[in-house]
Amino acid sequence: MTSFELPRARPVTERPAPVDPPCWHHPEWSERHPWLVQGCTGRGADDDFDLSPFGAAPAGAVVQRWAELRRALGVAASVHAPQRHETGIRSHSETGGGLHLVEPCDGHLTRHPDVLLAVATADCVAITLVAPRERAVAVLHAGWRGVAGGMARAGVGAMRDRLGVQAHDLEAHLGPAICGACYEVGPEVHEALGLEVPPRNTPVDLRRVLVRDLVAEGLRPAAVTASTWCTRCGGSPFFSHRAGHAGRQMTFAAVRR
Ligand SMILES: [Zn+2]
Image 1 (cartoon, rainbow, N blue to C red):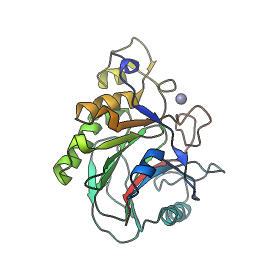
Image 2 (cartoon, rainbow, N blue to C red):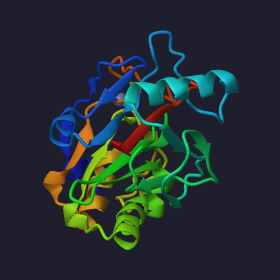
Image 3 (cartoon, helix red, strand yellow):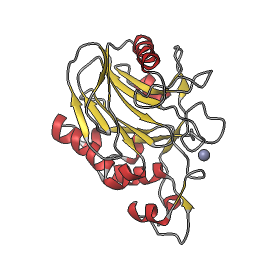
């Protein structure tokens, strides 16, 4: 099977939030889950709202942008980590305010209020998992290596084993990422993703592969949504690695205090 024969998630278009700096929110979640802080940042009007502390942007400017983001969202603490295209997930509890850079990992989860979890992307998929009943959240970074390595299983498993959240109680959103038309990859990537192996470089839709994987882990298909935004095409307001941008946006989630 190719990725284009897999079911799509229900499409959702993130909307600009009425805050400065530039943030985009899942409109259904904003309405349904007032306890939840969620969304992702954008490039900004001058293409310079880069939040990655591990890239080219000056550290002082990055720290300042994180402070602006926390102020706009009304959250005291934020956590982020260098990402390794693996499936390690860290749990976070109450912490002091400010930006906390922790040891490398590709996912974060918490049920504690006032801790903003964030993963960086610029074409890769950011997965947000929300447990409305338990009021717990996770954000996960998954490029093709993370998807192939089992990030869906790791994320759903961590919510179950550490927080007692069952898969059928989870909602998932696959954020702005490179689309199936723009993301051409080699046959080895298709093979690693468990897809039909094409004879030459061929596009793949990573978000559809993640829908397959999340549903296989027990999520209800109706509880999985995917952004209509492609980071690369369609005049996207987001950074795209393949479009040559050096910056990174943050997909974030927190339990409101
Ligand atoms: Zn595209």
